[in-house]
Length: 345
Image 1 (tube, rainbow, N blue to C red):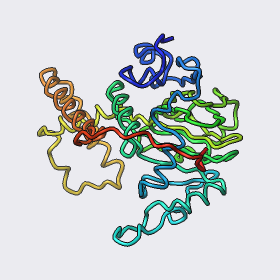
Image 2: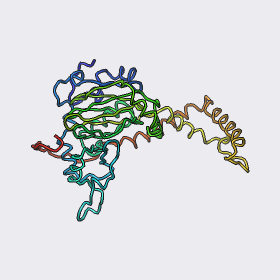
Image 3: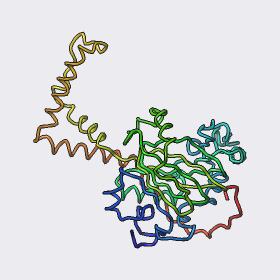
Image 4: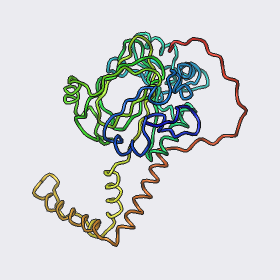
């Protein structure tokens, strides 16, 4: 276990999410198995372990004062995503938008049991944006952050799996999580849980691997593909979900193939009269193409160029997936605002 105490500052972002050092996390947990950690085991016993990142007051400000629009906001109830018109409206004179968050509608749906999802907090809330940039840099994979605000005794989504790894940071309230082993290991981005809906439902009916009530300051790492569902208990629950879109070997294959495709054997046209509806005609074309591809990839003299091209393409993707911090002039600090009790408290 790490001996550092959790808190803001210069300490590694990953160390605030897991109780082990980075090398052990990489060897034992990354992409392999979940890791649930109590606040006390992360080095803090008070309930404000992530208060510097987010809070119920941040929810109140984002809903009431930031003029958020879809898709930065969505709402769901008992597994069903609500139509945006249920919680958005016109921006008013001069705004010329029709999908701005309507705080009165949001509160009405929330009071009726709907979960509020604040999406893309890594672009809208500075403390979360800075933390996600640091975590992304440490992991080497892009990260994005959503907040889930669930009313008492309510469930936002059915059991499902994500196509990205997640870190869950409990901010306020309590939430009961059930986590089950995957039915489809390491799903890619185009392999959503709905492709395995029946298998997911059946697995969710089995005994869970993790069955815990999350409290403020608790954290979870969950690899992609692991099935999960959560329900708020006696009060409002707020948690952050940090989604990490891990680059995969399939990405390397895709970029390597794109690099070697520029060889004569692969640039050649398919035969005249080629009929893709005839499997017997397609089979020899596929066989010849695969042989040419293997030959191009197997050329030792081409490996350095292929590696350089793949690195360049992945670097461009990384820069696109993880936008840098915004440019801004320095400004004087503001006195911390005094907040009153909010609907999310």
